[in-house]
Length: 296
Image (tube, rainbow, N blue to C red; front, side, top):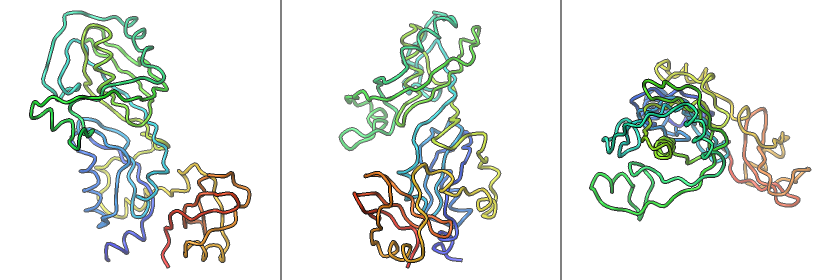
């Protein structure tokens, strides 16, 4: 079977639980080998040392990435007493501290991270400045100005604290683009004891939850992918419109439909025979076709 036919037969999302030691790209590469489908993409990078939810889009569902919710939730282990240049356990130790912190101090310090905050991304990150990734500057020892970024922390709370080991488990629910490594570092700075991210699990990404995920190591062949694929209609939180045969034919040719009661500028999922045919956007009395997933 050709790659094109494979891609047509598989359309949807996989809720993968990424194992430690693999990059997000490694996960995609492995799924491409198993399914023989090139059109596969993930929706949010996880560092190699991190584990947890990695939503993956199969086939033309890669074109739906922009419509997925992008809020995240993490369980982070912060180790106090040291700072590292990467803000995590893989970096070189920059400084050490003798100060010990209490559970009360941590709970109080976490309050300053709630809501909209500005954070500096780690120098060892893939953010580009002047066309070059920050970690490329870091590896060459070059100076570069890192500008703070606004992110939103909807929830941050201490889940556990080992006082003797000076290690804290912190739950963070946040917006896209939040660096948990920076939160670990900044928390240590605010407490005056230093800190770095020792482990990280992503427990939620949009509508994808860790308790409903499938471990990558449990996917050994294409049939397992097929049996775990998620219909985008079960995930996408937009108004949906079931088309008749004539409307479906119009949409396949990119012809707009009459808007039957949707608000202006609404994203509308266009459905025919129980499948997503297209995505449209409302404009006054029309639904303008933006993306078509079926083929003529």
